[in-house]
Image 1 (cartoon, rainbow, N blue to C red):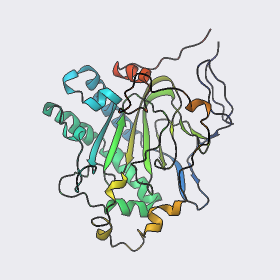
Image 2 (image 1 turned 180 degrees about the vertical axis):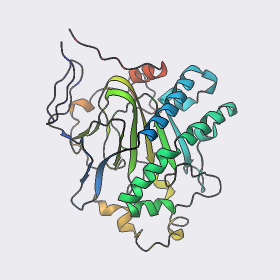
Image 3 (image 1 turned 90 degrees about the vertical axis):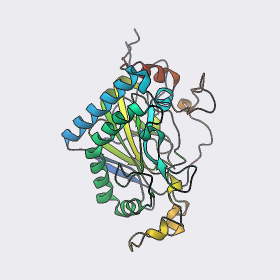
Image 4 (image 1 turned 60 degrees about the vertical axis):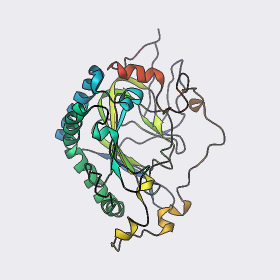
Length: 320
């Protein structure tokens, strides 16, 4: 009988279907990984307030099972990707606008469900905002002074947008739409084993558990999840898209001396330039695009999507 085991020194065992990264650095305790200029690449921190975690987990679980069981209330994005985006976009117009998931544009009767979910996230959003303010004050001030215009609410403090991944893990990807000089913040929820966050370029594995938040450079770092072994795993991601930073309306509104929004800082002088892998490593050659249309988000496997749509926990299978 054999199953997947990660050891603290980064060594590993494998099952018959998946090869895990060799000699990965394991980031378990709070701390930072920085580049040669002391810029944060990955920052792991604990969330000490258990009430926040319980409150948020209950709200997300309630919403998730409601969407699984009530076909009339499901959005297309939920059923397609098991992911919804709440907050403000700025993709097609000059002014930011409320996302379709926030506005419940598919069913106005569902609006109260979305509103209740967003209200339930306020304590967690306050914690994430304080985390950024305490550790990355320049980023905090930069985002606080973004001009969102008259049509987009600030439901999540300094962050214009969040994504919630409902009972799903992600294949490896770059978030190239995210701002290149900001960090996203990811919080896992649920009761699960596996699903570690992995950064192939750095060979760093983060075995995230409820009660932790990880901030990282989602634009420049390739990232994704190792397979979920058992349980249900949700995640909430706070982020900001690059197209929110328009010089004509955002930079001119900022009169803060300690925030140097000059071009050399905005693009990091290419210090965090994406590292391209010359050849794919074994775990990146898995063809997860089978039966997925090319114009759809391909970061979730069809098998995981099917399980999540049924509201099922992942069950640990042993090989006799």
